[in-house]
Image (cartoon, one colour):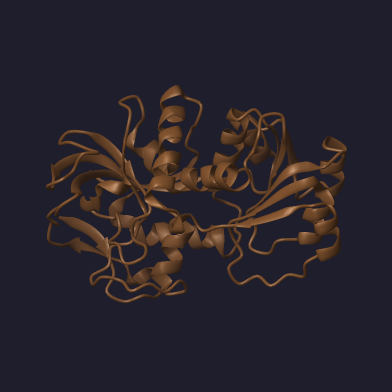
Length: 331
């Protein structure tokens, strides 16, 4: 089978594309014929060695995939041959990744895909959708009628947060870096958008939510806790999903006097049952058209190295050119 793989960590050029042996499912595992995968920032961190895991050799990167079940191992009860499925949380914690024509995964990470949802959309929504769901509902316990501020509403995770918060009945304020991106975020369901290149975030949020926001969703690598605490309502919840190396100052006094809470989490540390619960909602919302993928670029799997370069430009260099997910298709 064809696959994108590497034998040592490093720059995107370490990714090769060629033939590897087709894996065989063991007990509790399924073999999936892959049709689409997506690229996530964590993929580039693992490939570069910034996030260190014990990697199989050769190592196939990638967390997400969507395709059709071709073979099942003994004891499989979550899937059968011919099922359209999607998966996430692969390529991490010693697991092999998804950038291949065929992959073997545990049934614990395999979720059904409705006929009306494309493989490309499913792959694009996988990790980012689960991340948004965990942060909104497991961590922040977002309720209908509350107000949420989404920093980076046009990004992969941010666009999922905007849509899920809207489904939950919250008022959504979201930031983006251009007028075109603000318009796109409005089309996803944001009630208010703020162009952070031309507007004062603090002034705009205080104008739109004078009593403060109930949830502050932070996607930036360098969080501003003084700003967040100032903008949150009493008992506001701040969700962190980025900033691995950040060491900002923290306003302890204002934070505890407001009875705020801070929620940091890593999606790949969630349990299989927690991710499956998120996947059930995601499946329902995708099938109902309430959740839509935001796709910035589509490339063939053979261009995996280029996809990683584009992702790093967006994530590390803050190029601002990419809006949405990079998806690789597998013919």
